[in-house]
Amino acid sequence: MPVLEERVEIAAPIEGVFELLAAPARGPEWTPNLLSVEPLQDGQAAGPGAETRLLVNMAGRPSKGTGRCVEWDPPHRLVLASSLDAGVDSTTTFQLTPTERGTAVAARVEYTLTTGGLGRLVGGLFGDALARRDLRKALTNLKAQVERNQTG
Image 1 (cartoon, rainbow, N blue to C red):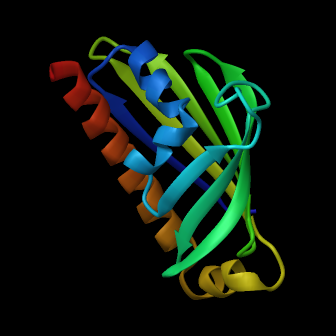
Image 2: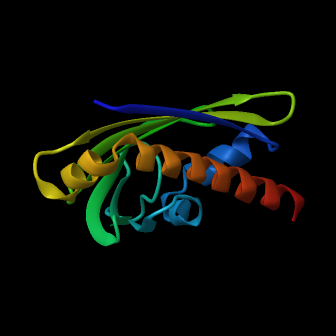
């Protein structure tokens, strides 16, 4: 199972960073290729056990899927699992730590490419490179958005 790890430091309090990470509907604002997120259960948009319907752009094609919050420890840790029709299953862990300058965010993505599907094709052609690029971009976007909200 491939594992990707990236870190970023954000000049904002830990609570504000966690608030944005933990709001599923806001994921498309900072996550590349995440087109939409909708809650599956009425009234539970976030939190432990919350489930979502996902729409992702994968190699230029839309892929539907589901997401679920599997661990919730505000404001320090958030673990999300997802499964896409295109053949990609992943678990993403965000670990937040307060620092002198704000918040350190460590992101870890573990993913598998199921047999068949677009995931296997894209994974075979590009592998870690695209996933790593998207993770770095997501953290850069998250940093920019949180810091912009701090000043504005």
